[in-house]
Length: 485
Image 1 (tube, rainbow, N blue to C red):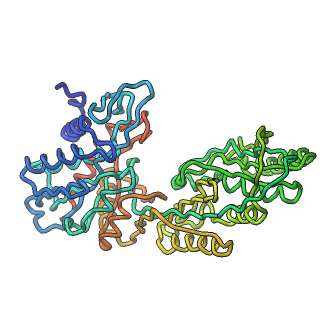
Image 2 (cartoon, rainbow, N blue to C red):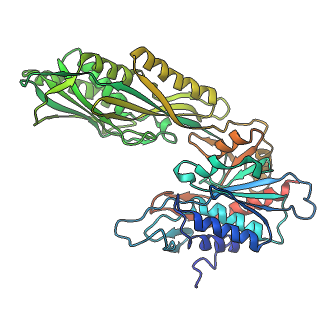
Image 3 (cartoon, one colour):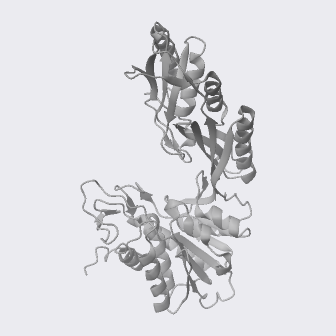
């Protein structure tokens, strides 16, 4: 079979990337990919472990002169996000990714490319195969289902790993060395609905907050964009002083980890109150437009008259609890890092508000690179719920990876990078979760760093990988391994 990437360097890295691009590896469907790695390990006479989560660990002894060097864990994940264009005929369960080279970019035709994190796997296989590279003892750890909850990392048996230096190859910008990531968790506040009947003379209206930019609740929380759920609570509170209204539904956002762009409240008014509603909403809209003129210049509040009959609404007590929750649940950046300038240390995002038949739920995503601060934010929501006499529950927690000022592997990377390029690498962190957080929880003494080549449009059909950046990243990794004796 003709190789599309045959002329690219480093040749063995792109050889293996093309190989694994032919194997189905959507999150949750990694069995064939996992078995391929096992066969690779056996073929190369390397100790290989495949665990019940289909994680694969392949071990290689240090080369001559490195026999007594500390063991290094090289780590990536085998699964990929599988997306395709609507008009593309592609079956991810059997069809290979159609690779193409476009200048310096490696791309896919009509689908995601899978460089996140296939390029890490390819680099690891090229190192394991090599008979000429110098390196310390290695353990290559390739995990499953990273994209859908880090399942493989969660289920990893610590007894299968001996190394205490870990290089995660799952970052997306060359020249950056990631040294910390946020841990997080979810919180759900549940307010039971007390319903009350109303007369048929009241008119229904929809009040909708729209035009916000939204974004990723971790990476883009520092942009201080408006949160539609938070702001709809403010609208309802400020309407109290001028309009006699009743609320019967409130909904906003679609994902806990996304800053909500839209939220709507359905209300009823006595006849003759419409002009007061319109005047009040216009006043609030002008305030918000002024406040968010930089981050969300298109913010607006739409008011539409309803058509159906409304027979029951939330009681005044329920309404007050809803407004209190939306006004008082922490939201946005809560603290900034003292170790890394410009890094968000902790945040919360009120991501989804949902009205059901008997309750309203408020779901938040908490993030922090310091575990005690994360716990404190969750405690604040528990206390608020206790005061309101409602329920608060936590779920889907994952640990942080806190900055280590004494990291050995960071100093090695900095030294090698400075020698190769004459400049210092950027030491940074990410206000989002990485598998490193789970590894730090399992191996408290693990010294870790994360890096990788430049890639763009990850998780979309526009995904691409810089070929030149991949070559430089590979060379940096090889020189770093050579430095560890």
